[in-house]
Length: 234
Image (cartoon, rainbow, N blue to C red; front, side, top):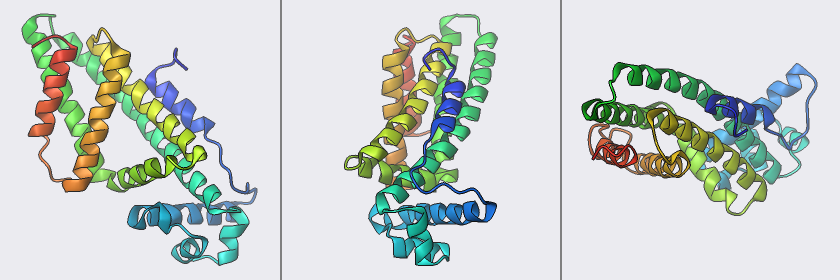
């Protein structure tokens, strides 16, 4: 995996996701199973992981209680498959994002001449791109972020969820590392770990406070300062 681009790694993770519940062969059965997983995700977003119970999920999905226990023998299997679906969908989304981001970054680099002024402009541009990404997450994918936070907490107690959380983290890490390699980081692995930690903290704070926080405020200032240190422009 280390030799693949970030988009390729995200795609590989999406294709490697393993589900725990009963497999389905008929289209109607798969649709019902999908209804159950989507209902469980809505409950996680609304009530947290502890709100996921067979009876609550059946009511949310509009299916008989026996359907949830048929596809998922216990709550752990249901939670694992709900988050597996989240990781699969998130990986597909990020594969497209990383591919598009690399193209844009290379275009920005081609516009510069390597001078200190050009490097400073690059810092501002990449910081703005990153801040815009966080704001899009908070505005357009808020439910996904809420679910991610809930599953991360539950993963501390559930090894099956911990594996999925780690897989999702690898997608984010490889994407950040590829971005930083393109713009000239000398230590892309360490710098990527710091950047993903910064982004995750910004997302968490955005969920706590409000998605209406200004991208050109403290968030942008932090990202500019971080990139100045990474690219040695300050």
